[in-house]
Every structure is written in structure tokens, then in C-alpha cells.
Image 1: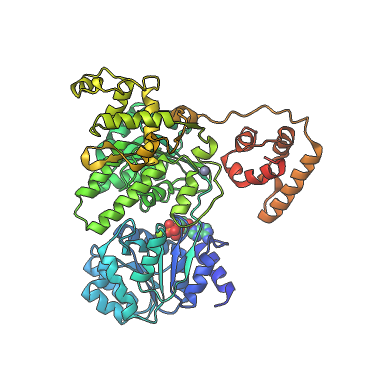
Image 2: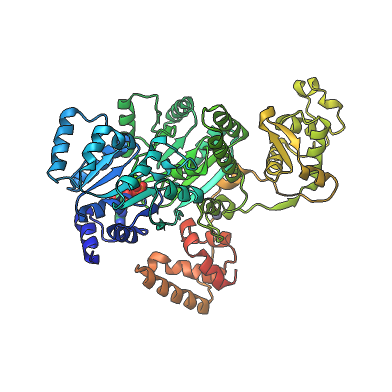
Length: 598
Ligand code: ADP
Ligand code: MG
Ligand code: ZN
């Protein structure tokens, strides 16, 4: 297939002049009739990877998709582009079905969307089987794997495609598959090729931060106050919370509403449409709100509760900043979230192995929330895109914690747990260490223990901060099967015996620090190092050529002068300069620091 053809179709039909990510390579592979697995972030442009070949190949492309809403959306969008496509699902009336079948028989349609159940339906299958099928596209392919985040048993049956149509190429696509899920998709679908097309998952315009979830609603007010009435989503675990928060925000004058599966489908449509056209700025929603939202200017996403895994979390924050402009993601987390999600899994009806996977994923999510190093890296590593370079824009990169020797705190906590016979939870342990006079503390007799009050000097919030870290480091464990009581571990004993030390991030007020914008420094830009300024200009020229943009798009002269005047040595120094925000810091920070010797 000549190269011009695919560019021509891209431009003429889809209206784009460049391919994104590795769309071009994927499309070539599909046109060469080789199976492919495409891992590309949400909004990356997976659909074109099969829609464009569908137009160039002889015959009809069958697209498998899990949701009727998704199929309808795609068909509507394709029709807008003048592409003949249809879907056959249970809600399609008999008369509409007859028309579609007729069109297909006349070879008029290029794409047919089906759900897995739809394809497996006997009548549909008999009909499909006699068609000239050019390609099978399996969208949301992670649904085929129990390791994935949204397993659907009907997807597994899709393995029959390769048996029945051994010569027809298959393209499987997903935005959410960690390394083991990728492997499993190839295996389950019996793909004949190991050709995988992995696009980077990094969204360089999204800044991630996580905060421990005390007084969440107040923290939310504070956060959205700084957001200048831009659009955002607040994800909650319960329907009830979406309603509560929406009503509080409305009282405060925000244009907010709520969205969850319990609302009528008409109401949901109205809410979504109003959000789409900016009549509403804030949607408080359960995860039911998501698939099919294609609003480019969502500036922020808040997770009121911690999601159950990184896949879901990343998909949800990925709805922000589709237009490429800066966006923020704020995650709240707390023990309550963790224990509730764990209970959902434990009490679910799923198979044992499935539950174990879900629990392991929840565990990773919890580690992410508590992470004290680059969060972007954490996510990229999770998806198998191993990176050591830090992002320079997440909370941990912008304000790295200071570490202290916390061996004494560790010993206090462990002794307290032992003296209380490992029968107390975190809150009681802190009360014990701080010598609280709460009635419940006395009722348990904790006031008679030797450790009562030994940690009085350390404020309550600080203890929470430290004990969470001790748990992450395995110095203490939490027994979820025993009312979340704290237990000692082999590491606890080593610490008590002075066989190891304990380093913890020093307490800082997560709320204050992370909301503070770095203050812009006043730098006297008339007084700069001229040689270094020249060097920076040369660097900028090279970069501008490479990126095919005007120089000033990279940095204005005055920013280069500010750099040459202040010779910044750290990322925070850089951020303090006028003209350098998080995005530019992430894009160019390392280059500049290399030149300044930072
Ligand atoms: P995904 O399925 O990966 O989440 P879509 O296929 O729905 O993403 O594409 C997301 C958006 O990006 C759509 O609006 C689509 O038209 C647009 N898009 C896809 N490819 C390109 C491209 N090469 N250039 C510009 N926009 C593109
Ligand atoms: Mg898609
Ligand atoms: Zn980072």
C-alpha cells in the first residue's frame, strides 16, 4: 500500500495531516495483514488504527466493542465523516436491522460494530460468517484478560475468531494493560504475531498530586478556588457522596451537578451535554461517568476517594487536558478508602485468583497514594514503560520530602503495639502514644501501659503521617481480617534490637505546601552573564528547528536572560523564574540544569 494513500485518507476523510503516536506503523502492519496489539493511552487515537485500514481494505471490518453507548458514538462520528458504518445490537429494531443487513449484503458498509455477545448470537454469526471480512478489531481488548481491570467473560470467547477466520488479520486495542495483561491478551485472542505497538503513557501536561484525605471538602474548596472556574470532575466512590458534594458546591455558587448510574438516562444525558458545552463546570460523579466523554478542556480531576487500581485511576485522570494544555489531578486517600475497597473485593462473588489479582492491584494503588517519590514514574513503571527520569511536575518532584532518622518513633510505635497485645488500631495507638484522656482509651486500660504518653511531643497528625510510612515500609503491618489492628513484623523486631534504622519523610503539611504556587522570584534581568545567554540562545535555535516552532514558543528572550542572570541549580529555582511553568520545566528543565551545572 503506497504511503501516499494512507496520508491521503487521513487528510481527506479524517481531516488530520499527521499521524499520532505510532498510528502509521500500526496501520501499515494492519494493511500487511499482520495481527497487532496496540497499547495507546485514552484519547491517543486508537480508532483510526482500524478505521483507516477499513477504508482501504477490500470487504468489511468487524469491530468488537463492549458497550452499546460506545458503539453508537463511534457510528455517529463515522457517519459525520461520511464513512458508512453501522452497529447491530439488541436495541436495534427489526426494521433497522433489515436495512443494515441489506446494505451490508450490497457491500455498502465498511465497518460493522458488534458486542462479543452480538457476534456470538447464532443468527448474527451465520450472517457474518458468509461476509468478506477484511479485519477484526477488538477494542478495549483488556476485557479479555482476568489480569486486566475490567474482565468480561464474553470477551474470552472471542478466541474462536482465529479458529474460524485464520487468514483474517486481528487488531486488538486497549489503553489499560500492564505487562502481564498484554501477554495474556495475545494468548487469549491467539494472535499470530507478537507485534506490539506501545505508545508512551506519559501525559506531560498532567500534574499529579496525592494528599491524605482529612477534611476533604475543605481541601476541595481550596483547590478549585485556584482553578479559575475551569472544568473539572470530582470522582466519588458512592452515589450519595456525588449528590452531597454537588449540592455543597452549588450552595457556594459553583455550577455543579452530579452523575451516577442511579439517575434516569435522560438526566444523565442532560448533565453530560451541559458539561460538554460548559453550562456546568463541575461534575461530581461515580466512575459511571467516563466512557465516551470527549471534552478537550477538562482542566482538573479530583478523586474524592482512592480508586481501586492504577489502571482506573490513570484512565480517569486522563480525561483531563485532552487539548494538551496544563491540567491537574488531585487524589485523596485514607485508610477508610482502602478498607472499604478491600471489603468490596473480599465480599464479591469472584473467583479466588481473580480476587487475589484485585487485591494486589489495590495494594499497588495504596502504595502509589503513599509514594514519596516521582508519581509519574510510578505509573509509567506500572505499565511496563520503565523510566528513571523523574517528571519534574508531580508533587513529590516539586517538593521532595526531607528525610529524618525516625528510629525512635519507630521503636515507640512498636513497643506500644506489643504492650497493647497487638489489639489496637492506628487511632488507638496514637492515643496511647500521646497519652490521650479519651474515655475509650481508659476503657481499654491503655493508660496503665508503660508506653502511655511517650510520644506526647509529636502532634497527632504527625503520628498519622509517620505510622502510614512505617506501614508502607513493612515496619508495622495492618491486619485487615482483624479490624485493621496493627501487628508487628519481622522488621519490627530488627528495629527494636537496633539491627536497623528507620528513615522517614519528615512531616509536612500536605495541604498547605502542595497548594502553594512557587513564588516567582524577582530577578534583575539587566544584569546577566552574556556568554551564557548566547549559549542558551544557540540551544534554543537548535531546539526550535527540531520542533519546527518559532524560538519564542520555547522561551522568550527575557526568560533566557533570567536564567543567565540567576543561574538556577534546581528545578524549584527554575520554576521560580518568570516564563517557566510546570510544562516547560518538564520539557526543558533537565537540559537547562545540565548547562548551568545544577
Ligand atoms: P482512543 O480510542 O485511543 O481513546 P480515539 O480514537 O477516540 O481515542 O481518538 C481520540 C481523539 O483524537 C478523536 O477526537 C480523534 O479524532 C482524535 N485523533 C485521532 N488521531 C488523530 C491524529 N492523527 N491527529 C489529530 N487528532 C487525532
Ligand atoms: Mg477508543
Ligand atoms: Zn514526578
